[in-house]
Length: 324
Image 1 (cartoon, rainbow, N blue to C red):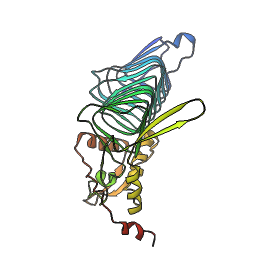
Image 2 (image 1 turned 90 degrees about the vertical axis):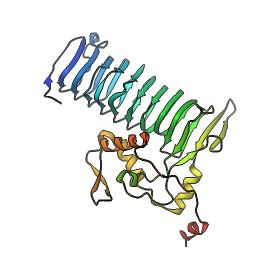
Image 3 (image 1 turned 120 degrees about the vertical axis):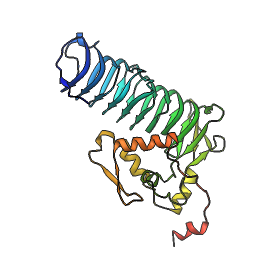
Image 4 (image 1 turned 60 degrees about the vertical axis):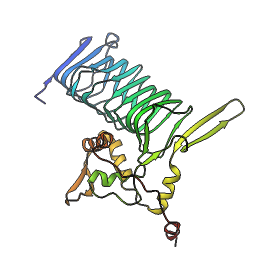
């Protein structure tokens, strides 16, 4: 990134290009509440941002404080470069990015009425009424009050009345929840990574025995629960592999470093230093950084890294031996 110019402003509409904002962009009077902020490229805002509408036309762009928009946060579909939000992002209406060629990163949670993201990495969770995700990684959960549409994504878990899924969906946690049955396009596959040896996969070393991805069957892995009181009755569907996880935990208390890896990712901008997962097959230390973790999960999503299939076989004597 070339040298940026500092900017001070009081205009009703702000355009940033090659600018460094040393502070926040917040309204100081009523006339500034409806202010539109446009980032044309190569800009850094060190503080928080409030805008009626925030549009990012081009990277590189970095906002280090929290962001809230009254109408919309919009990333141009033609945007390229790196666009990062270091703190929580919220909107009273929508957050939209259909950009195919930019490196879009959210270091924390997203909260809006509707969220549409393509090719994005979200270290936190997404809270919305309607969510559309395509080729995304969400380390936390996706929580919707109406519906979720996911295509070829890795997500921690989801909870929504209605879910539509296509291509390949990867879950990091053992269970996900809906009210209606999940609607899937033929050929769609669900895999659960809660028993995959993500630590060894990250380091490039041999994956542990009794570890691996679990292909989920949405018919046999569905658990339906009915909750009722005097006034109403509600049915919750849980798609879960928790029984397999419990059996594996009895066999091996080593968590494959998955929890440490996922926690490091979810810390986002709070990861103040780099940690390591030990050494790789060449004896070199393998550091944990936000950028490397992001690259690792997208490698899984694209098939450049592949978790082995779990065998699902164990001997009951191995379990009883743990307690002798």
